[in-house]
Length: 125
Length: 125
DNA sequence: CACCTATATAGACGCTTGTCAATATAAGGT
DNA sequence: ACCTTATATTGACAAGCGTCTATATAGGTG
Image (cartoon, rainbow over all chains, first blue to last red; front, side, top):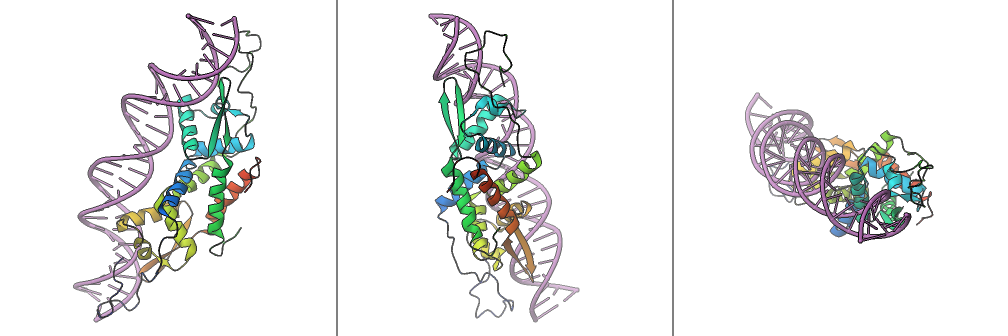
């Protein structure tokens, strides 16, 4: 955000930058919401958890998840909370156990956003 | 990862948990790679930057980006580096300026992964 | 060459995150 | 009622992140 309206100033370089005349398209709140979801996916253990849940939705209790990682039970619980608060997974208690499932709408929101990005410049898969 | 093979132990509860017999599907390196990309998108400013680039690919120099945020130039530079290192954007120098573009393959990788997740449990958009 | 401009890097500093051990909570069994 | 088991919460601590100011680098101009 340097020189822009320098028309009478002959000191300006012959080519000008900062010519893009536009504003941000995403409302700040939406950028923040998307960022929170992306951030929740921003840890290898949480990626694996979501992957596991999406394969065995509804059949996975916390101790099943614990069994896959060399991490303490509170740490797993913490990662599950991050995912829950981001709206990416949901919990359901059955008896003594808590079963986790992916939250379809949360993941779909990420997916839709990335697709919208893709259909905007010239890159498709 | 508590009681599991307790068959002779009559102390076990009548219903058992941890019955899921499977292992992680994603290689650790892939989970790490995906997590790095997700993490890079895990900040509102970086979401907005990627959004901007995907709309005006190739025409956006750093000072154009700076103009949209109330952040110092080094901070923008830092966010751009995070995105670059995650493989989500690329930089091209033209004269004195550096123009940024989204990295189609990076974004496509995220998109494909989320789609793969979706086609695995019963949730489509 | 000397100077200017655009971007990147380095260093500092407060805030957040990931992890664990210890403890609390809540559901079930006896 | 009491004990046991599964999960969540708390508190602590090291490591990482986001931001700034100050400085370096690299390309362009006169």
